[in-house]
Image (cartoon, rainbow, N blue to C red; front, top):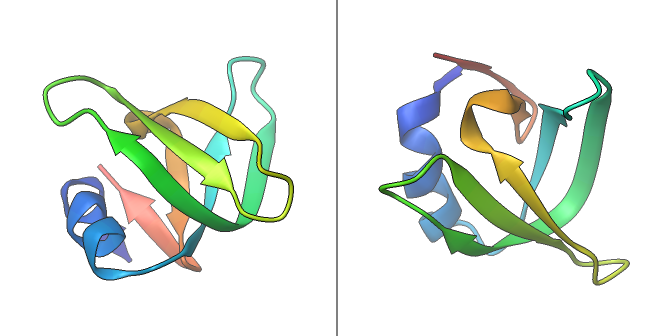
Length: 74
C-alpha cells in the first residue's frame, strides 16, 4: 500500500513504472512501462508517457488506484 502523496517521490526515483487509474467514464485503465513526462505539484494532474506506444495521457492524481502493483490510498 502506498499513500497518494508518496507517488511523486517514487516517480522521481524510478526510471519507469506501472499504474492503474479510473478514467472519466469509470473504466479502469492499466498502463505498463510508462514514465512521467510532467507532474503538476500545485495542480491535480500528471502526464504519463507509455513507453511501448509513445502515447501521452493526462490523468488526475486522485484517480490512481494502483502504482507498481501497490494499492494507492488517499
